[in-house]
Amino acid sequence: MLKTKQKDKYIHTEKENYMQVGIESIGFYTSRYFIDLKTLAKERGEDYNKYYTGIGQEKMAVPPPDEDIVTMAANAAHEALQNAEVNAIDMVMFATESGIDQSKAAGIYVHSLLELPQTCRVVELKQACYSATAALQMAYGHIHLHPESKVLVLASDIARYGLGAAGEPTQGAGAIALLVSASPKLLALDAHAGFYTDDVMDFWRPNYRDEALVDGKYSVRIYLKALAGAWEHYQGKSGLKFEDFQHFCYHLPFTRMAEKAHKQLAKITGHRDMDENVLAEHIRDSLIYNRITGNLYAASLYLGLLSLLENSEKDLSGQRLGLFSYGSGCVGEFFSGVVQNGYRSYLMKDEHLKVLNSRIELSYPEYAKFYSYTIPTDGGTYLLPKNETGLFRFAALENHKRIYERVQ
Ligand code: COA
Image (cartoon, rainbow, N blue to C red):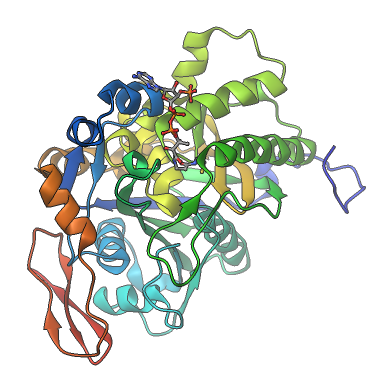
């Protein structure tokens, strides 16, 4: 049983009583470089099937030195805002666990690069891989109060475990931008969500470290426990059942994690004997992109959602999706939404495939060189080496300030 302060029975309120609020558009960006995990496996003396099959990852995105959470988020946001009413944006929330400054919100740089209105709140949020979900839910509440406004939720991260660490093959880098509004052309969120918080040390990164510390196997167990707790809370509030969902998206530290999670959810909801192909079909399309980018931490769940929407051959209009967000430490949240009619015309699948298929493959030494680059900390003036990036790049350091530039 969950420890809960609320004893009242929840009543599932039909969605029609609510204004529709949710995701209007999704922008995605990942590094222009990747390493194939066959290359990494060879270097680490592992059978590549451990990575390809055992953890379900094939490629991982590797950011060059002139790419960081700001440039990736700016690129994703630029895409998400292509057809948007930018002047209506009055809040930008930047979710990350790869912060570049202890004080200033990374979102302010993005706000500036994209010339967003000055009548805007900007803030950064942190809770491991979970914080973009907190941002999305805060945006949901904000828009219910101010239906004319739009909120930009940015999730951008660089996953770093260390050369040779157990988590190394699950690294990745990238960003997702969600435009949230009362005109949810892609996904209208349901009002109910279930939460689970527990004080555990499965993954953390002290301020003096560039790389995360992780008890990997423990984190998998805690993830599953948080899923059970968040589902129980969600189910009690919403009254919805496992069979009310056509597809599920899970936080994806590596794609096999979703398979483990989905089996667990099927088991605790009394569907232990459900046909394995049906269970696989529930999540299959949500795994396609993450398999070739690696873990995007805060953005991972939302890249999974984008992957499902863009890769499902079936029309998902009207279907209810179950989403599970997890951030180590830990917070889990189960929530849901309904795919909107005509959603396909608001997706940018061709652009995403073009970007993913034109990435540059790195050799192991090239990957290790990018990985090991450290930016100078003496306050001098330095130009960052120029590599392939998107529209924005981290160009220079001057007097402890990061300077960004637009490339084209
Ligand atoms: N062919 C196919 N599968 C293989 C294999 C091979 N040659 N060799 C190993 N495997 C399988 C293992 O059986 C295991 O499968 P299982 O999970 O079904 O038991 C899987 O590959 C992983 O192998 P394992 O030995 O457990 O890997 P590991 O000790 O290197 O650690 C993680 C795996 C996930 C714990 C590690 O990558 C990690 O710490 N990741 C970062 C933390 C993380 O992502 N946590 C998730 C919650 S946020």
